[in-house]
Image (cartoon, rainbow, N blue to C red; front, side, top):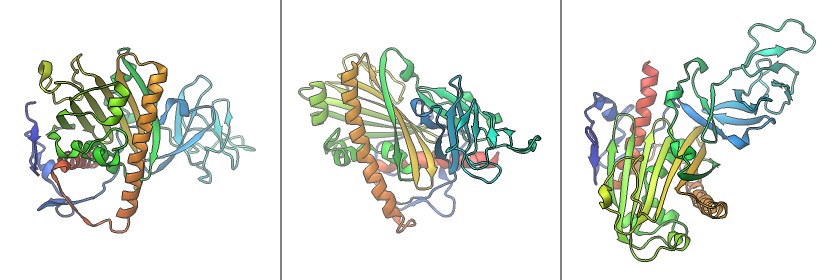
Length: 391
């Protein structure tokens, strides 16, 4: 991987030769990392990016409300089935539109009856012939893809579909996909942290997918590129976690890999699997979440996740998991049930941590070797915000 920063252990923080080293090393408002100490600093939300707003089956002809980037949004479908996202705040008295009803393809404010079309333009004011020219609410650019309704956080005119996250496996016939939505009461980057550092699985998930060996014996590499950060984890020649052994009928020792990739502002892709003698097999020494796994792998899965900020202390977690090959529906439901149990364990620990942070948000955090990918992801997120602010 030319130009990449490779970190096996320790706390090596340097630029990566792309002309942006000053961004990687810049520590606003004092040092963020020094002498093994970190700060959990938050940053403004990036606006010019795609955010998952809802799973496709959540959006119906009944308007629904969701807070995204600190702003209220109402989502509904037109009669033709197209998803619409508007500011959930009537321009008349700022009352929410979401409790209102749809009149054809317009949403009617439940307070005074003003109607707004899918472009956010007010088309009717009860008892008034002329509609004020400035009577409108914000309309978001919307794309529906991968079974998810996405909105552009910035001005609709600037929406760039080329910046959509790549979840190609969701639509690939060679993979079987299932996903869902979770509400997590924590800052969105804490949820990103949770994915970038999988050393917690042996403790938080010891009843599902974890083993203490995940933290004790994993080989970890961190790669920081200009637009993404990747963490690669291997545990070699060890028994599989009990849940995996039971689900997949695995006997004996396996090599287990976990590739986690972060792209700003909140997109995480994972590539995981296991099998006997996987490490180095068939040139299997990749650094990309898009790599192919050997056919001899017993399990291969890809996680596609968007963690959309709700507020400073809450987020929306959208994820679609893909499994190689055809998986029967009953079996897929069993796997998803286990996934939900695992994710709920994350929700519980993250909620408790966010609650604890509130008592001392400026507390110092001790940096350990597994935090390299976490810190690089946070730096990348801050860089994206600063770039947007400078534009």
